[in-house]
Length: 225
Image: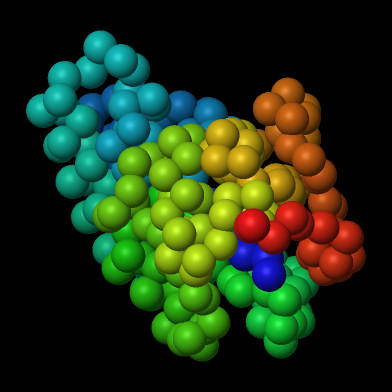
């Protein structure tokens, strides 16, 4: 049995436009000049507080981080249902998920820096109810790249971390998976460039979802004794 564990933003869902707009609004609300787009999006995957901390700088007060987080949430809620900020699935994501969920040797899971409320919104939008045997969010776990999400997901489905394939678009996803002892698959269409994903030693980098199922097929796990 294999647990195929997906990140959400930047891996399954193209939410760059929405997240960038919310970050720009957050910076303006805090009286700061927004950073370049690529730098802003480099924090996607982290939980909100460490993401804001990384963008604003380590010397930013806890009070200002809290204020910025509140501004981000407000900006997000103002835009999340606006068609202009729709977050579509990446090409091939729906087909890959549909194929994998039919497999008797695979269970699916999510591991994301989003809140559970945010994940539920995504599940509602794409009709994914009942598709994922485990869902790990920022509400119940330390932020990536801590391995906690992968370890907890494996426990919840009764598998070992060596039976997990972690799929994500950022170095945070790959570092999390490697630290937990999972196989890691990076996608090239997300928020971190291939060079960064290679630096953290992703086991594989794919350029299209069509490459994923063969990797899952080829992944041989040692069943626990």
